Amino acid sequence: MELIPAIDLMNGKCVRLFKGDFNKRKDFTKKPHEQAKFWESEGAKYIHIVDLDAAKTGYPTNDITIKEIAKTVNIPIQIGGGIRSQERIEQLFSYGIEKVIMGTSAIENKELVKDISNKFPGKIIVGIDAKNGKVSTRGWLEHSNILATDLVKEFSSYKIANFIVTDINTDGTLEGTNEEFIKSILDITDIPVIASGGVGSISDLLSLVKFEDSGLFGVIVGKALYENKFKISEANNILSSERLTDFDFKNDYYA
Image (cartoon, rainbow, N blue to C red; front, side, top):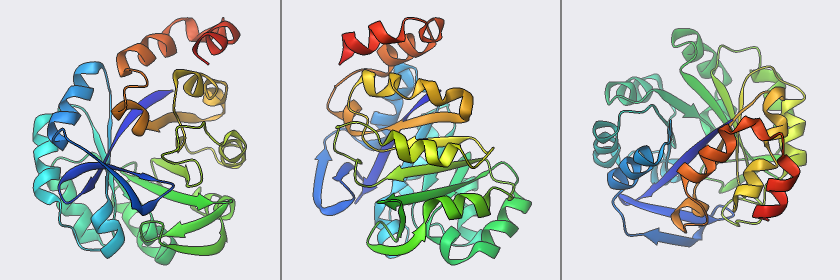
């Protein structure tokens, strides 16, 4: 299970939202490309970027920053936010992005996702953001009655690389993950899943290791890293060491 650090972009800055609320935003001072390089030096194997401006409006305004990040690090980057056309996907690939995340477009234009995933097999991630199990779109500003599990079932037949599933109620809270939601997704798909939302401590990471054999590929972490709740190097050492035969002891220790 990989720890994947997140860079959420607004106006060229690293930010974090609380439960997806654009009015509850915290800015961080380090430049995005510097933050990405620091996390690479800490042992990150991937970088996760969300263009919040593009997710909200559909218009990319952070491309200079995105290209700067891509030039700065030597590890794969996955990016989401306002990606709603093949032209935009090919543009991002031209910047050196490894994988693109389709969220709103995946729900609103399923045929596009099917066509794109056939054209770029293993390069497309479907991002599903849910509140109380139901899908939200357009930067979490619009809510639906569509169940996240129904979408996962449908998209599991596509040639996608991963699902990223985010529980909006836990995102940015540092209060722990929604294990029940994560398990409900893993139970219905064979496509590797990346979970997001709520990680505030190493014990939160350790609590998810039990899902690794069920297809949990990674966990996205943002606010906890920005606020120095733990370091990537520290978490990687623990996650890689003997695959947690003494899980209960470590869970108690880091609680």
